[in-house]
Image 1 (cartoon, rainbow, N blue to C red):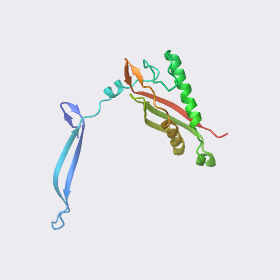
Image 2: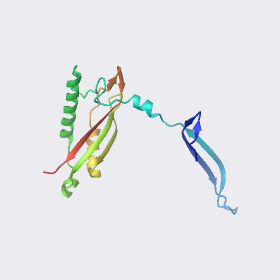
Image 3: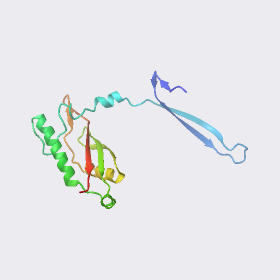
Image 4: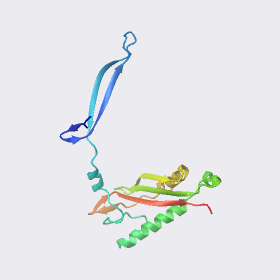
Length: 166
């Protein structure tokens, strides 16, 4: 099958079958109607145009307490406050302690155009560790959003959280 197109743009078509079961007839069911709905795909170009990496953005998001004029110092402050937040909110899951579970969780999230933390994704050695990492990141305060060209933009941020028993 060829992908559906509309105005030369490939998209997705959803087929909706309406079935009617008629016990008196020999057929098990009868197709009453078939509807289609064409959906143009979301363009990644537009999405990417609104998202800028932390290391290349004009003005990084501002962690509360890091309202500093010099951009490089603001980046350092952001990272220091992030680590302080993680250490202050970190709780080793009791289940993981009892079972001796250790490991590392990679966390990816977005600081959106309003400074909110969104799209938290985790990948780690154990689901309980991922859950704890997600809890820590969800407690981050609202920030001043990052800017590119004087306009607020989304900024993805990733960091590892290591769970180690001593």
